[in-house]
Image (cartoon, rainbow, N blue to C red):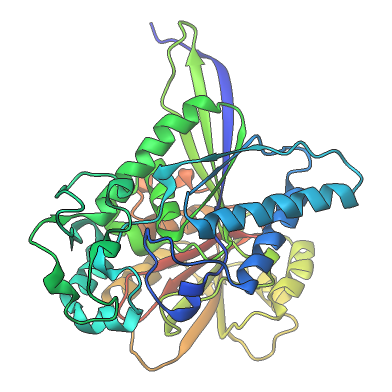
Amino acid sequence: MQQSAIKQQLTRVILVRHGRSTFNDQGRYQGSSNDSVLTPKGIETARRVGYYLSEQLARTPIDIIYTSPLQRVQQTAREIIQAMDEAAVCANTSCNRPSVAISYQLKEISLSHWEGLPYAHVRQQFPEQYQCWLQRPHLFKLPVPSPHVPASNGSSPSDLSNVSRALDASPYSSTVATAVDTHTYFPVRSLYQSAQQFWKKSLSQHLGRTVLVVSHSATIHALISTALGLPACYHHSLQQSNCGISELTFEHSSTADGMDTKPIVQLHRLNQTTMLGESLPKLKVNKQGLRLLLLPGDGLTVEACSWLSERVTGLPIDFCLAVAGAEPLLHRLMQKRSDVLYLGGQQTNFLDTWQQWLSSSPRPADGHLMTGLAIAPIASIQGLLAQVLGLPPKNRDDLDVRRHHLSVVHYPHAHRPVVQAINID
């Protein structure tokens, strides 16, 4: 006889990337090295996150904060906590400061001799490795310096941390490749293993609680991907900006005999950056190609379009399109924009057609970026996002696309599509 679920617990996990760092400014690979620290801008944005979380979590306080041990994350967490304390004082409310735990499973991806090198240097000196990193991240491998770190294809990033420090050569030397032996490891695979280990350990300890995770870009990619079951080959298909906020929930159910079922996981937000003063997340890959802003047509009313028009007025929109029948809403939404090309009357599945065309057609490197606003059914938006992220169509409901919120997909030149954001406020 099938057992019915009798108890449900919802665990909420908020993911925040560290603030902008010195290596970010210098255009250098950070990896698991610990030499990079927050810039003044990084400190400021971390504090903005703290104030924002204070407002958002007034009714659902954070129970525990997990952080990476690296100092740029430690600095970010301290600034977030201090800002939350200050917000509580200003609001004359009590603030129960959550406990903080350091997890080595939240360290950034280990990048061997790339760590500390400028991006341009890596592209020029290691072109084959670099292309593998971009196009086939699940097969990407790097040499392990010996004898400081043993060869391994399955070690966690913490076992391979700071391997670049074992090199005697200058981090800018083109001879760095000769300073290593033939032992290699797979950085992305190792990172995903650590992410899975983090979920396995932390979720069971905090059922029904709210958890804040402060970590790194690649690490958050891995956490979201392993939670949703996304393959590592799609590692570069989502974006996590400095101090961007993402959110997952895990719904746990227990049966009458005490057996726990597999949790239902949903991604509710990806890369929220509006609290940082960004109308849209900044482009990470390049500033070329096509960017689609996706707005659900479900439940979209004339009244909603009137106040949403203020939201889109300042956005760099070149064209807009909508399913057939939604043209009046589109015109109401864009009533303050006379410089936009209208492409109305689209079929219900027009996003599928666009995705197929964009996937098969090379995007020219002409230095231009075209941005389009599309009104489409939630199911169509979920389907497009799922395809870009590598999520099976049957699991598209794992992406909680909300009414009246924008999601953003970028189709850059010479790069796979990237989901920049889901459910921007």
